[in-house]
Length: 240
Image (cartoon, rainbow, N blue to C red):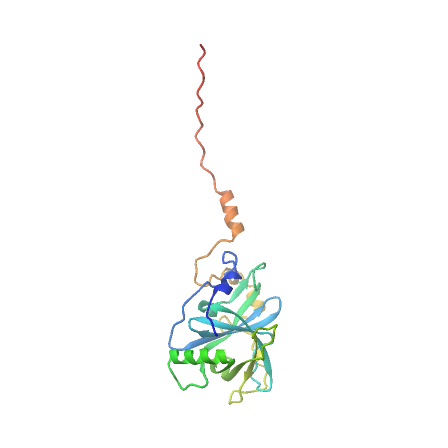
């Protein structure tokens, strides 16, 4: 059964050291999606769909395509908080997923099997489809458009059902053109390399109060002047 939880997400991160979001609530009449290009230890694309206030996420090593003849491996990963849809910046070295992230595409989606239903009805359908291991959606993005399918591969002892396939359906948006050549962020207009060189990217705080890293807190504590102690008067014994 599908379970929405941020426990694993939070266990893997130290929010005093990484600028990644800690939470956020879904809103609006439409379910959103985001695809983030992530240069970590291995370059990949993070494919995220809003369901019940969190982002169900898959890591797609080679990225989405618009060619129905090509199937892309999509590995299910931990749920991410809703605010992660806006995250673009640098995850510092020493942290989980260290590297540069850009918002490669964003927009909204709906289950392909519904016809303009409410968000609640669409989420109910998505839960059912996820549990069945066969998700069909209509995407309305800036780069990804039309029908796509996420199909869970046959489970084995090793993958625990985490391996899926991301497939483009045959529709009016299908093409053999390499959409990966569109390599700029839809938010900033920058490439991964440009964001990696940006000073402001390193201070992105995802709408939360900046938290000083542990080392910085320790240094600040050491540098802070300590109040002087009043001299202690010692009693002098009188000579008899």
